[in-house]
Amino acid sequence: MKKFLLILFAVLSVGVADTYYAKLEPVEIYKIKSQVSGAVVKSDIFLEGSFLKSRVVVAIDDKTDRKNLQTSLKKLEILKNLLEIDRQNLKNAEQSYKIKLQNYNRIKNLKTKSRFEKDNQLLLVISASNQLLNAKQALFNLKSQIDDLEYKIFLLKDTISKKSILVKDGYLYKLYVKKGDFVAPGTPLMDIADTSKAKATIYISYDDFKNLDKKELYIDGKKSNEKIKVWKIADTTNISSYKAEIILPKPKIFSKVVKIELKGE
Image 1 (cartoon, rainbow, N blue to C red):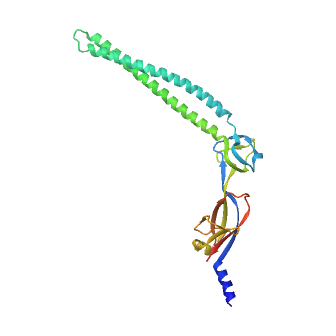
Image 2 (cartoon, rainbow, N blue to C red):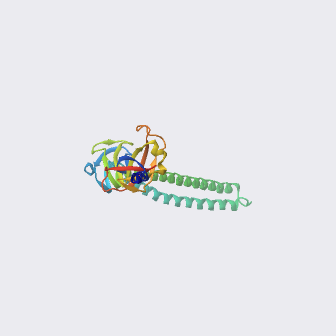
Image 3 (tube, rainbow, N blue to C red):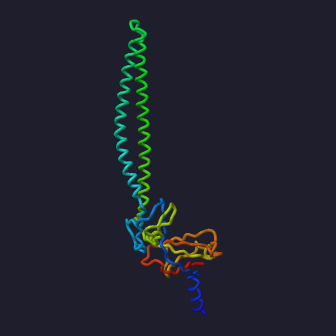
């Protein structure tokens, strides 16, 4: 009888364990979509299923954009040269206006100067003022053209950059397009998997959900200190179960099925 009680005590000490099974998946799979429209001129379909680093996988035709950019850059250079000329014209106009205004102010109250002479000097001041205003307006218009052109160049560079889809670091899980396809903004191009960590998803019972803080996590029979993220609302597909997610270190092999136990009261 004493031996039986010892065995029973040992079983109760281990506690009840609920067992689940999950497949080790990449921690995240990113769907890359096209941000521009155009014909696909490159699609390295043979790279599907490969780990990539700094590799252009898909390219969209950008010949027109590059030609437009080249023309716009040349035009910008010309406008900037004209801007320096207009600035000098403005400086000259300001100096001319200042001189003519000083001349007029010097004689306008002199009784020795006739009305005709005073009016001629005033007309010269008005003419110089108009030239100054025209110079300012020309400079303003040219600056506005340069701003518009610089914005156009920014957009062209942005569009060109978006037509070469670079995978900096990741696993090419799936490629959706091939050479010759036409894509529009929003068209799926590829799926990239983040394999730096693994994710195991299980659907736990209400009892495990309610008593999770009293449970200990075991993976393939080994105790684990990894955190469990649990959705607070029951799953719509797995009725009366709660989705739980465990982030794990990168495994040697993905898609392996692991045994997950929640041991406790």
